[in-house]
Structures are given as C-alpha cells and as structure tokens.
Length: 290
Length: 345
Image (cartoon, each protein chain N blue to C red):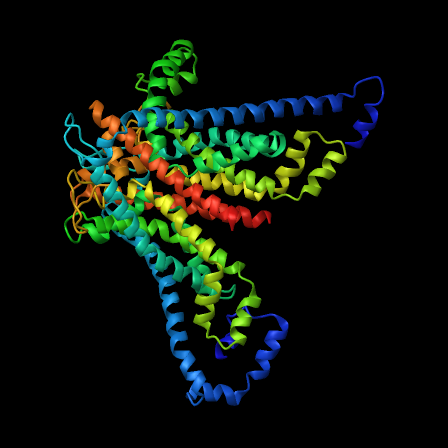
C-alpha cells in the first residue's frame, strides 16, 4: 500500500493506485445508489400509506363499527378489540418476562445450566415465526374449548412479547453496578429487597423501554390472531368469544373487492403504523433524555 | 447473609467482599441459620426462598412454552408423518381432494423466496450502511439512520399491502411482459420467466421480503460498523487507503461476525414471514423453475388452508407437520448464526 503511495509522486500514474481509486469510485457510486434506492422505496411505502390511508380516514371510520360493504361502516370495534387484546397480552407478558429476566440476571450465572438453557430458549422464542405461535395457542386454547376467543389471541400475543421483555430486563439489570447490590446487602436488605427496590428501580427506564418495544412489536401482529381471536364483525367485549382486531381486519378487507372496504383497510393500516411508530419514537426520545 | 455465600452468585465476587463473606461463613453460624435459631436468619429466608422460587418458576414457564410449541407441533403432525413417511418432506403433491400431501412445494417456495429476498436485501443493506457510516454528511446520516431504524419496526402486513397494491400490478403490467418479450427464446432464462402475467410469484414475494428485511439489516449493520474503534479507521486512512479500502479491508473483516448475524437474522425473519408473503405469492401449491408463476410458502399455506381444515383431518395434520418443519428451519438458522458468531470471535 505504501509503495503505491510513494510511486504516485512520479509523472507516470501507478496502475495499482489507479485501480484502487477506480474501485473506490465504483464502491462510492454503489453505496449511494443503494442508499438512494432503499430510501426511495421506503418513502414510496410511506407515501402510498399516507395518501391512501388519509383518503379513507374519517370520523366515521373511527367511530362506527364494521359492517357490510356500502353501508358507511368503520373500524371502531376493531380498534377497541386491538387495544383490549394488546393490553391484556402485556398484562400477561410483563410479570412473566420480568420474573424470567430477573432470574437470568440475578441467579443465572455462567455455571448455571438451567439459566443458559432458558436464555437460549428465550432467544429461539424471539425468532419463532409468529404464525406457529398462533397454531400452538389454537391447539392449547381453541381446539379443546371448541371456540375462538379473545383470550387465546391475547395469550398468543403475550408469547411473542415475553422474550423481548426477558432480553431487555436481563440486559438492563446486568448494567446495575455490583456496588449497588453490595450497599443494599450491607444495610441488611434481603436479596429480594435488593433486587426489587434497588436493581429493578435503578433499571426502571430500560425495563420500561423493553415493555414498550414489546407493545410495538405485538400491536401490528396479524398471523398469531388469525386462528385464535379470529375477528368479529360486531361489537364484543367478552374475552371468551371471538374479537375483532385491526390487523386481522386489514387482512380481510385489503383482499376484498369492495372499494370502501379497501379504503378502510388503508385507513386501518395507517392507524396501526402511526401507533407503532409513535411508540418507537417515544422510546427513542425517552432514551435520549435518560 | 446466607444468600451471599451461594455458589451461583457471581454478582458479589469482588475480592474484598468475598473475603468478608468467607470470614462470616463460620460453620457455627451456618448451623444456626439452618436450625432457624437466628431470628434474622429465619425471617429472611422465607420471602427470599419464595422470591427465588417465583422467578425460577417464570423462567421454567418460558421453557415449557417453547417445549410445548415444538412437542405439540410434532404430535399434531405425527399423523401426516406416519401416513407419508419420510417422503412427506420430498413429495411435491398437495392435493386436498385426494387427501395426498407433500411438503416439497411450500418448502421450495419458502426457501427460494427467502434466498431471493436476502440476495436483494444484502447489497441494499450493505450499500446503505456503507453510505451512512463512510460518506453521508452527519446530519443527513442521523436522519436517514433513524428513519431506517423506525421503518424496521413497521408491521409486516403493511409491506404485504404495499406489495399487493404496488408491486403486483407493476410486475404484471411492466416487468413480466418486458421479460417475456425480450427473453422468450433465450434458453435457460426462458424457464425462469415462464408463466402468465399474474404479477404474483416467488420473485414478487422475494422483492417484498427484501424491502421488509432491508431496513432491519441496515440498522444492525450500521450499528456493527459504528462499533469499530475509530483509531483503526484513522490508521488505515493515514496509510493512504481509499474509502473502499477502509471498508473492505478494515471494517468488514473487523465486523464480520456482526454482519453474519444481521444476514441470518434477516433470513430468519423472511423464512417465517406470513402476512407480507400471503398477499403476493399467488398461493398455488406447485413446484417449478419459473420465478414469476404463482407459488406458495409454508407460512402462507398454513394461513390460508388452516381455517378450511377440519379438526382431526389428515390435512390439518399435514399443515402442523409443515409448521414443525418450519420451526426446525428457523431453529437451524438461529443455531447457524450462533455458531458462526462463536467461531469468528
């Protein structure tokens, strides 16, 4: 490399340096073109979503429940159904994920075989195709009872949320300095007091971030709900019956041949995306402040 | 203080502390602890044991969920595996009328669409990450980087809808007629582009998957590239290296394991993706070389045929067996990522 640099001082261009420079030009162009393509494609997705979603978005779309095509129906029951199922899923996933994360960080050292096994399983669970989670919950909670239920949908979503919460909880607790635990122990605090009142409290922001990220991930999931909460045309607040959700409604309406249903699907897609993006932006802003 | 002496407690292994613990760990005190004679000892061990039990139980529950997932999928698919034997994985028949099922058609679709997706997403992600870390002005890099990270979180059904309403018509009206017109008589290519211009198929699915996983891969690669110590970069520039030299000979070797992780994670996402693919794959269970004819993938087949399959039928069992194979595939890709990362570190 240094040879070529020295020899470029002569009047004759060094072929190696020239080759390196042209390779650099090609690579630069390649990088810029690729970045340009990616940004353009993603902008096109957002533009399609915004233009078609805003056209379908109206007060009626949010306030009225679903109905037959051509009846000026809306998405209200799907929106409420999505909110209920997502928050129920978080309610189920948070204690479990926190408990598992605490176990892995406070009790699961490198020599603990059980803990490393759980850690690996949690990683596997994070990358399991979400439709398989739907199949699993169908076999456990739908087939034995003979009917679809909102509760089954929530459990499926919770299974997807747990590994995310486990991972962030463990990582955040590991960042808590040992001195903090020693100080707690020196003051006579028991181990659970140290874990909950010292470690978990000082890692609060990070753990909360994990829960929010899990919420964002879960709120756009469609596949696990297809065979669990199924969807519902009418208002339903019962957890033991099928319940509508926004992603499933989008899936059903987008493929329909009625113009107003397709418009509602776009409006729903816009709502879901905005919700997910809002949560992610909130996480980012709070992380920057903290 | 009994819990500080527990062998699995690496948290408290700072030297002075462990010496102190050792000093207090006299046999007599231990005896008192277990006998419950020490008031403080017995008071503390109750809630502490309960807490330990509680968190260990939630860890066990996570283990049970995955175990149950695998076992139930295997048991459910058992009927199909018993009926068709090992040939299930290699038979390309999927005929609900004759009750004959084979996994090869959807498996082929899953593998090919994933490979196309990764092959397109990789240069996009690598080029964009290269541009973001080496060329872009800091302010623009910050904006584009954040935007890409945010887009990695967009639900997959949005990509499916976009593909359905944008890519499918584009393929049907522009790409396929163009290819058929110009390459119809070229041997080799003819087989790949064969088919009526529906716009759906493996190529469309691969494109949508690529667009879906590219932001995610870009975000990970950018993080990996940015994690390299600046000194290495500066030394290379100081020796007269060009931007590409630095990228290819310093950054890429340094961050190889992270890049492999990004690629394999993207691949794992593409393998199990349901919603983005179901919209654009065309859903025909057939095997063939054409990338532009309607096909199906494991996930899309499950999503579409599961509701029509009565409980206890062979078809349901075949779908569960497909799910089991998909599970194994995604498991294998994760294990591969871990192995490669372990090797290079």
